[in-house]
Image 1 (cartoon, rainbow, N blue to C red):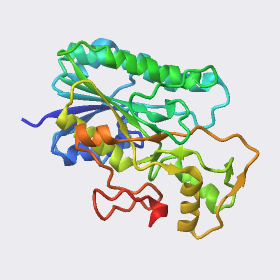
Image 2 (tube, rainbow, N blue to C red; image 1 turned 135 degrees about the vertical axis):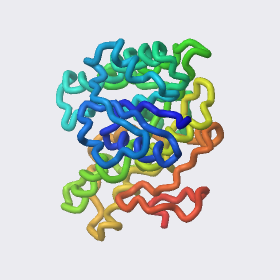
Image 3 (tube, one colour; image 1 turned 90 degrees about the horizontal axis):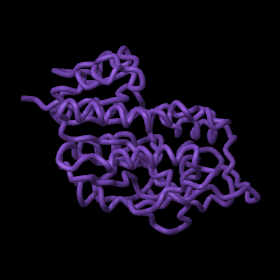
Image 4 (cartoon, helix red, strand yellow; image 1 turned 90 degrees about the vertical axis):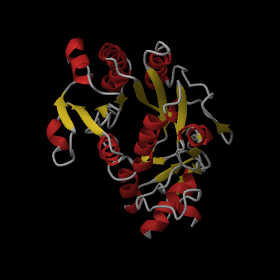
Length: 305
């Protein structure tokens, strides 16, 4: 019997890659989506889509939707495009807190065996030049609490799952790159000469390409380590080097620096746990071309060519 994976948030920029790559791995997908029409032409074989708003569907019906699935993936997000006030984050935060609680309860009622939760490394405290692993604390200071408290609450709910009833993994993704991600807007800004690097550009980011991020979920569903938390990131890169590399790729002038501006948070994240426990390794370069690396062990970024 073909094992079925339920994906909540299947129409998102990551969700569509999850659907495609789980199907490629031989799994059927049950996509739970607010806009099922967005998956037209993407589902194959025994895969199916059900209309579902995670925050509104009755709990009993949500559990019914999950019956027969051996894996549930929570990848539903609602990032505000231009957040100006705390309330702009409320829809996204509710998906992480209330949505996670509802999905966990339904998974337990449906007898699902394994639960995968999307999370983020960007909630970590500022690390400067230091490496950050999965034991790095989240920054829940008042200035960042509007987003990070919801992340912490979401992960707490997953960690408190009863052992043996529903095993789980939390995948902390780096900033996503590839088509449809915020990188698109950055590339446009660089191409139009509008991007200015705050500070000297020495802070780190730890991106991951959409294809590699989706592959991590597939690998986790296959390996199923007990209650694992994993950084899913490519090789960290200093932001200044990153945007300079994009400018060189576009053959335009490199962005200027505003050295009077405060340096943004720095996240130099390690992915050794995911390599060891999941057998996962990023095979795509981050950057607009998303070109495959010549060898899985090659760790070079776009600007190191």
